[in-house]
Length: 405
Image (cartoon, rainbow, N blue to C red; front, side, top):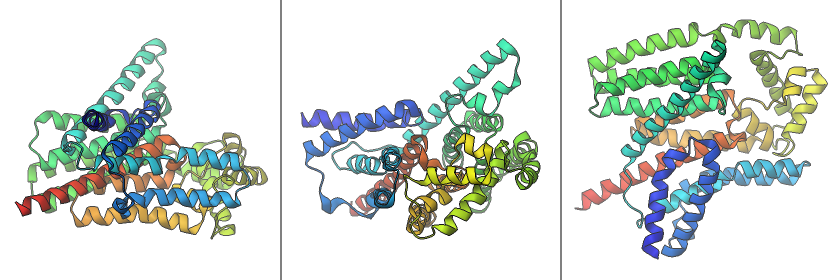
C-alpha cells in the first residue's frame, strides 16, 4: 500500500505541470494533490516539525499576517473569503515538502519545463483557433486582441503564464543544444503576446529578452545567439510598446485622470485608483485596514471622491504592493518584498537564469495587478515559487551526493 501511495504521489506531482496553468481545473487538481500529499506523509511518517526549514514557512507566514488582520477587520465574511483565496500559501509548501522527500522519484526539472512549454503552446493555440473561428463569423478584429483573445483568462495573468514559457524556451536556447523549432516557438509566443496586448506582459517579456541578450553576450559569449536575440528583442520592444494601441493611449489617459475623476477609461481609472491608494495608505501606515475591510474602504473612498468608473467596476488597487500595505500594514508589504528579494538573491548567487527571470516577471506584474487577490495568481505564483526552490534544493543535494562519491 505504501508503495502504491508513493508512486501515485510521484505521478500526480509530475502531472501538476500540465494542470496548474488551467486555472479552472487547477483548483480541483490542487485539492486532489494536497490530499495525496497528506496520505503520503501518513504512509511514510515523513512529516516532522524539525524538517520544517525556513523556506517552507515563507508563504505560510504571509498567510498568518492576513489572519492576524482579521482581529481588526469588521467585514469578517470578506476577510475569510480572502483567506480562502490565499490558502495556497499554506497548501503549496506542504505539497512541495512531500515532493522533496527522499521517498519520491527523482525529479527531472528540465523535462517538466519542456512540458510547460508544450502546455503554453496548447493554451495559446486553442485561443488563436477560437479567435479565428469568431473572426470568420463576424469579421471583427477585436477577437484577436486583449480580453477577446484571452477568453476565460484575465489578459495580465495569461501574459504572465506565456512569459514563463518564453523564459523556459530561452533557457533551452541558451544552455542546451536545440533545433530550429525552438526559435520558432520563441517567435510564436512573442507574436501571441503582441496580440494579447497586456502592457505588463509586454514590459515583463521585454525585460526577459533584454536580460537574455546581455547574459548571452557577456557570459556565454555566443555571437550568433546574441545577434538573433537582439534582433527579436528590438523588434518586439518596438512593435510591442511603440506600435501597440494600448501603449499609445497612455498620454491621453494621464490627461484624462487629471481632469475627469468619473472616467471609465481603463488606464485613467487605474491612475486615479493608485492616487487613492497612496492617500489611504498614509492614513493606515502601520496596521492597514484589515484584509476583510480593504474593499469596503476603497469603495467608500471611490464614492466620496466621485470616481464613478472605479466605484462601478469595484476595482482593487491594481498594485500588489499597495494592496498588501493597505490590507495588512507595513510588516505585510515588507514581508512581500522579502518574499521576492530573498529568492532573487539566491538566484543571482547561484546563477539560476530561469529562476531570476521568473521573479523579475512576478515583481513587474505586481506593479500593475493585485495578483494575490485571485486564485489564478496565488496558485500559479506559489507553485512556481516552490518549483524553483525545490529545483535549487535538489541541485544542492545532487552536488553534495556527487562529491561524496
